[in-house]
Every structure is written in C-alpha cells, then in structure tokens.
Image 1: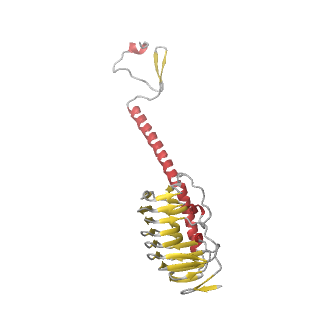
Image 2: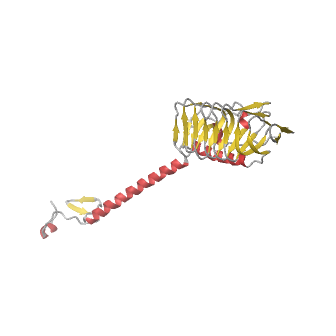
Image 3: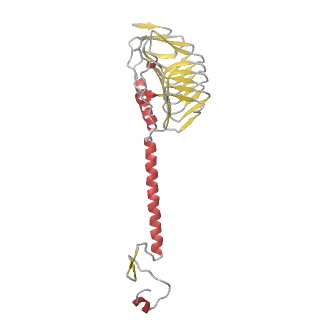
Length: 299
C-alpha cells in the first residue's frame, strides 16, 4: 500500500522500532549542560547529563516522578545507549528521501529522510498502535512556532524517532512528539511542549518554560534508581588516592634523607639495663666526652 500526501510517497509497512536501552527512563539527556529558564516541568522521566556537570535552572524547573542524574553511572550508560540508538536510526534505509518541509503532510509508517528537516503547520502521522515512524535529518531539525505533530488511526506516540545530524530547535508554543536523537544540541523555545524525549549526544539541552512528558503509549519506565559514581568519577577517585600515596611516600623519603644527612638514624631505640643501645646507628651525646665516659655505663 502506498500513500501519497504532499510531495512524495512512502511504504506503509512499518519498520522495526529503535531500542533505547537504559535511556528509555530519561526524558532529557544532555552532554555538556542541561539548562532551564522559566517554569519547565519534566513529568514521568529522569533528567541526565554526561560527561558535563552543569545542570542549571532546577528549580524553578520541576522533575516529577524522576530524578536528576548528573555525571553518574546511569547517565553515562544512557549516553552509551543513545549512541547505539542514533546509529540504528541513521542506518535505516529511507522509504522517502530529499524531504525539506514536513508541514501539511499526512504520512504512513516508514523511514523519511532529508538534509535539513522542518515542520511548518501540522504534520499528521497515520497508523495503528504498532506503527513506527523514523525521520532522518542529515543536518538540522527546526519546527516552526505553533507547529504541531498530530496522530490519526491510533498511531503510537512512543514509536516516533528523530535522528538529527547536528542540532534540533523546537519553535515557541509548538507541539512536538517523538524521541529526538541529536548529535549535538537541542533547544526548546518558550512554551514548546514535548511528548517524548530530548537526547543530545555531544552538546547541551536548553529549555525555556517547557512541558516534557513521557507518552502514555510507552511501556512503563524502569524503576528510579539512586545515583552511583560513573567510570570517570571512579577513575578520578582512584587517581587522587594514588597521588596521595605517592605524596606520602615522597615526604617519607625526604625526611629519611634529612635524618641521614645529620647523622641521626630514624631506627627505634631500646633500653637494656642501664645501657643505651642504639639500633642501627651511633648516637653522640654532647659535643665532648672522655675515654672514661666511653668505658663506663651511662648514669
């Protein structure tokens, strides 16, 4: 079955979905920073950052039924899984290529590609609960102000994926649906609402008074877990401990050298009877002594 809507056509046979691994439990995942302005709400999902450490603007942003994972093991693994998902989506064979603007179109399940993708007006996705839609932007994804992604026929909001070769920008007061897998950055302008996920592999996610929610079509997310140290953090701790041990060893060596230079050995002393026995060295008591004092016991 082929459906023609606007320019071009696509095959109605749905492609396999894109697996997200542990990233599935995140609504927002950045690399360098996650920055918020205004009263953004992230609902039913985690916020993560790796390898950066600057999560800014939380609060006033609220993470409801989720936690913030800043440069911890969970965020690190999620970023690794995003790389896998990105490569999967990028490697799919397009059903339709050379797309520019998706606005005003109704599309069936399939893989759609273009250089710089845009949405002006409404994009309607037509399919059933098992339908998968994959969009491949070689460079940018830009949605216009007040643009919308709509559904018909019972299509699953959780099965929409946007692979973006550079950055994605969601226009002010737009309504966007799907998981963005961006190589660099993602920016959501003022008032944009997202049903899905925003994943930036190498740069920032920037929010501005947005609402981001996990689609009710998605399977229940994994249980929230507490933060644990990342491999980078563990390596840094080990390196710091090794440096401290080395510094202690150097200080001991310097002290031993100083004692040797003054003719005093740092070996322990023991008292046997009334004789002072010097273990490992000779102690000179006073500046002057007589032969008699050498032959007699001290004291």
